Length: 345
Image (cartoon, rainbow, N blue to C red; front, side, top):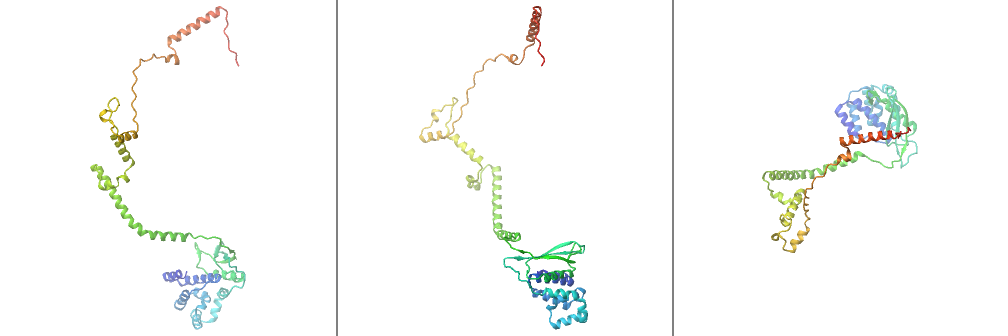
């Protein structure tokens, strides 16, 4: 925090905003038993002793009285207010709140196993409520002390949200005590991961050129094989470890063909090429059996097409069947037989 305040003043040289930030730090320290560092004290002394007086310096001067010696403080009052009566008339509110900023807690309610926060509510310039949480606070501050310490923020105009002043009016507060069962900080994990990556960068940097060199040699060997049809020495060294499965399979098939005996047209072994040793017989038995092509059957005469008997009738057969049915109906009519009618359901 100290460095951020110093960097802000060095970059902006805005003493009015700096003084208001200092008052907010005093409020934070008062609720959490913090210490106003020596570096900030020196910065305040520099501003009040060297800068031209303005309203913010005059209004907030009581908060920094402890930063000056007795003689320095008297000379500062003359510089800012010309006399003590003007000082008391223009700093009444700031002197009232300053009495609470430096007071000690009066309650005896602190427990070692609890962490306390001050959760306060303020209204902004538009009357909207917003919450301010101050972590890790001193629970021994009484209600009167805590309320007036928080009301000190209403003197500040530097804190805004979208152009709307934030701490206009104090509303309420509470100080809950919390027991931290477990905790996690993702930022610490990220920092540890970044540190490990930075540590591994030199090793990766040395491995990358070697891998790139090996890839280039492999690509170049493939190109030379395509052009010449021969293997380079580097390829011969790594042939049995990096050859693809298809290449190994084709070599195995070639070895199998060489170990099998040649056959004549009747697929029987030739006496000249028959195996002559037990080792060769064993190798022959280990080879997969080759399938003989079956003999083609002799061509048989075609059967007559009888599909019309299964799937239909010829026109002559249909006409003959119709004529037979007509003659049968006439014979039945002459014999007095009546046609059976189907009953309607």
